[in-house]
Amino acid sequence: MLTKQQIAQRIAKEVKNGQYINLGIGIPTLVANYIPDDLEIVLQSENGLLGIGPFPTEDQIDPDLINAGKQTITMVKGSVLFNSAESFAMIRGGHVHLTILGAMEVSENGDIANWKIPGKMVKGMGGAMDLVASADNIIVAMQHCSKSGESKLLKSCSLPITGIRCVKKIVTDLAVLEVDPEGGFILKERAPGVSVEEIKSKTEGKLILNGEIPEMEF
Image 1: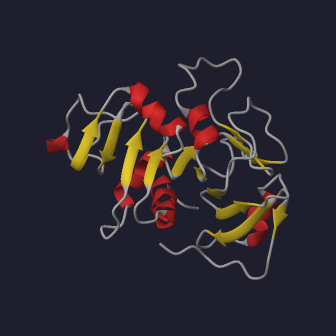
Image 2: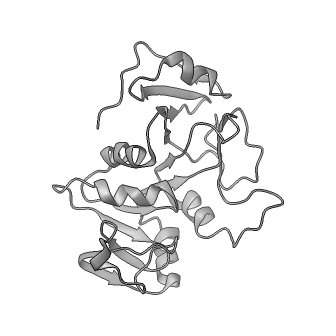
């Protein structure tokens, strides 16, 4: 199975030159460390920053410079700071090309649940609902199963929904999958050493197999 860092490294291969990209809390924030040097992209944080760089080394840490998940970050040359109202105007105006989010559940129709577990305290939904309602392309970074071993790729979400039919691609610790517009998870790649049978056994939703499934490359 992949580590969180490897999931982020694989997702970085989906990034295209010239994109403005929002990184959600959790695994998605790690993607900043794996952006290829030859690409000119701009990472956006909804708390008001364009131009996120890799995570800081110990001597680079600035406690006043954080992302939406309150992690300390660096800024690249040309970065700009602004208030969150302008940041959300950018998101709601459709100016973010790609959004990478974590999730607790994804359904075979592309629904995502990632902001609340009933009965547990939550600080707020953050920018998740704005992001899933506005982004053209949403990639989810997540663990394939819960800590108890239950699949998180489901026929339908059991947790409160963040967005309907919005997820395009999912990268888990076991596989890369695309959401079929007609419903179902299309298995595109498998993690090194992971069999198709294992992925199938750990996917509750409909799993679509088309020919040989290659191992991921990084």
